[in-house]
Image (cartoon, rainbow, N blue to C red):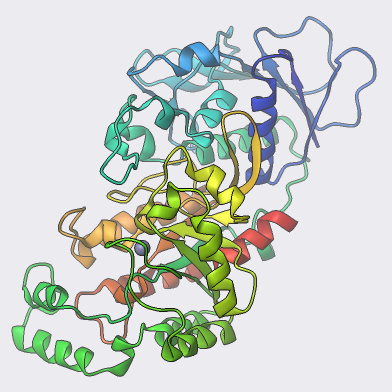
Length: 489
Ligand SMILES: [Zn+2]
């Protein structure tokens, strides 16, 4: 067990406790707060001290000292140049982003140095590690969405996008919080090799991939999509005759007109997995999906999903992310169709504004998976792990399972517009990142784009993700399974 001691009991202490609670779960390390360094300490493997200077009192324990920065002052220094720091050691994350730092006197061995200034940011002696990077402030900055609060720009749906970031959008390229968690665990293990680590995922799996499908429309094929797959550019089927034959087969396959629920749930089963389907239960504005949950054939589709262990979440409408009272009604309408409690939500169009967190809480949503970017891949919360959301004042009970990778972001002309073959290296990089951090990668493949007799290679790419995860010892899970594991663990 690791003790932590917060020198500063006033301004940042609650936020530091919040961050340490999230990090402890990501690391699989038990942590308790120590209020006084004078007198006998409980049996600890090591002590993490967070503050402005190393205490003068003698402590007979390995110590990780993390220098505290002036958070409120530093957090408003925008826009500024984000610095990357690089490691000298192979088992630590290659690069992390340094947004906040305090002052330390480096010890003998440099572990991390600033990429630009070469200043030593992390150093070690036999039983001490000194860290000038304020890990807790940086994690809080990401998890509390502080950067978004400083950004003044929003798009036409009142959404924050990564290019609006006052400190540059590259901070969202990598899961900085997850890399800090990995770094901190590795350094604590160096100080206390016998420290107990509890498994982060069931059956001690190395990482997890959460599978989800927004149900935005029921038929697979539209005129636009038919035109798109007939173009030779980026198609896995270069021969136009082969391509046309495949399209005709796909168009005549009934499953492609019925939502692909049978196909996707059978696919999940063949990997001993399950996934979460997000359905809308209301149509409130022109861009909301138009299908009706009460139609008999959609009820049959839902019954198939439930029978095969998939779960049903709420796909909140666009207006419900901004106006009070709507989401609660949508959740109740969906629950009356699926005949069980709906735990999770993801807003259609990934709509999220300053008001939305409170609306989720009022609708008694247990977990959400909206927080990703609608037009680019990225770690909007600095993490792929589940975490309890912070509303700026304090921790809330709502668990966020951030969305990292979405099919439409990869493929659409208006977004990254990648052919399936070009998208794989992008996807693989994020899988490798999750594996390296014992992390979670949540993906969203729209149900209307995951179908039998694929013509553009997008469904095959999804299957490639399932294969890679299984081959690399990952856990394929639905969002309900991730939620249940994270809350009972
Ligand atoms: Zn949607």
